[in-house]
Length: 202
Image (cartoon, rainbow, N blue to C red; front, side):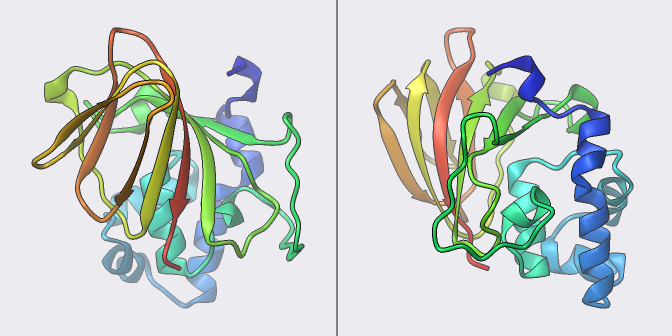
């Protein structure tokens, strides 16, 4: 993935992810505590997201989208479109790079690219994801409502739940209920690339 496709602080500000979260929260007349209760996220994290100090990862955006009753694509697109057909050209996807100071120690360092950002009210979220190597003891498990499909493009990926471990090779795929605790890491000391499709129950 080209470096100039990733989002820096100024570009993230242009996306207005934090502002959109705050605007939706206020439109629904939620306090920060209300949104924290609905999403399971801390008030501190929500305040940091709204101020633009934190770029939220996929799992966090999905929880926010669910709590605010919008699709995740809402946070990437300025115009609310309802086209029956949506085409995203190769240079139109929006990529976000997690930076070390934007996540807890040990959490997976990755880049995710939203492959469709024009249709807001959709039920699936297609992503291109780059996952970095990580020590087993540093893996952080996440969960969110919905289902996920992952297809490995490059590299070897370890998929873990609380009681299961699978190693996925290029060409392998996995479909799972994403409300179970799960974590991914790249193996063999190099970046892995995969296509992910997430169905979020809005």
